[in-house]
Length: 85
Image (cartoon, rainbow, N blue to C red; front, side, top):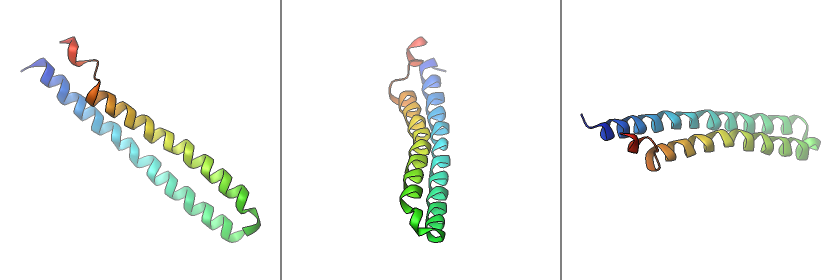
């Protein structure tokens, strides 16, 4: 078996597994937005504070998904392991 093909195949598998990490931020952001809407419904006068906190939390959660995307793109297109064999 060709070593470069084997490394490329495992890199594609690793990239797919890295993109599974995109599920967590999606679920977390949806839950965060739902809870923020619920909190605003209970206490409308605190809307600006709740919205500010929600946006900060969503940005922190999204960074995890972006890191996973970067790892997947590195494994697919700029893989440092392909040239080792």
